[in-house]
Amino acid sequence: MKAVILKDKVKMGGDIAPLYYEEVEIPKPGLGEVLIKLRNAALNRRDVYVRYGAYPGIEVPSIPGSDGAGVIEELGEGVHGFEIGNEVVINPSTYWGDNPNIQSSSFLTLGVPRDGTYAQYIKIPAEYVFPKPKHLSWEEAAAIPLAGLTAYRAVVTKGEVKEGDTVIIPGIGGGVATFALQIAAAKGAKVFVTSSSDEKIEKAVALGAAGGVNYRSENWVKELKKLSGGADLSIDSVGGDTFNDLINLAKPGSKIVSFGATLGPVNNIVMPRVFLKQLQILGSTMGTSEEFASMLALYEEHQLKPVIDKIYRLEEIEAAHLKMEKGSLFGKIVISIPQ
Image 1: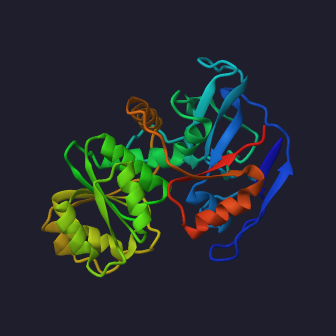
Image 2: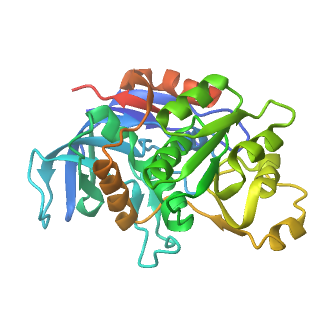
């Protein structure tokens, strides 16, 4: 089969490791596993960060890729409830464990060190395989898994979003942020966004946002507070100085859920603004299989479709990663797998 391989480990802060498009053996499903012929995969920032050595436990050679959808090709011993030919989507959050509040020490995100979805075939435990939502195309189904699950846990499980809540999502455009917007709006929340691009704000409004502001404006925090009335819930992947702005925008008794920090550490938090407002600041990452199933059910119930920015062929993976690094996207980058 054709696959993209990560062969080199690099030290964090060094040059990016190259990817190799090569022929490798088709994996054989073992006990409790299924073999899936992939139709599409999708990109996440994790895929790029792995190449920079930014995660512990990187092993090479490995096949990257966390998102994928395809058709069951073969059933391993002991697999029940599936048939060859079933159309499925993969949950990349594996070995979470029994505690829904925190992942276990065995937790792994699919794709380095466990071989991922940048390939024509993948074997994976059947418990992480779910029916593909019928209203989604192959490209849309492949775009959902990691970002959709991350957004669902942040907005619904941790954020406990309610109908009528005001939700603020800074830095709209990335995969998780667009999923968070769709999920919060589907739950009846009023969502406001920020971006350095007026075009991205317009796209967010078309996707269900109530409005947004350009954070390049000198008084964007005041503008957003006047526009939104303040946040009952903020969903943050930005960190840095923006996190302090979210504290200023927070209503008393509200929540801020963090799942990333693209701008780096948060400095100079004025703690009285946190405790006098009785704020809840929560961390979140990935999610359980139960949350994955609930996320898919929400997308089916509301007939939601993920936003796809661009589709690349598997052999164009370097170009796809370069686009993600530049950050000039709105929604997900999807990979077409050769058939």
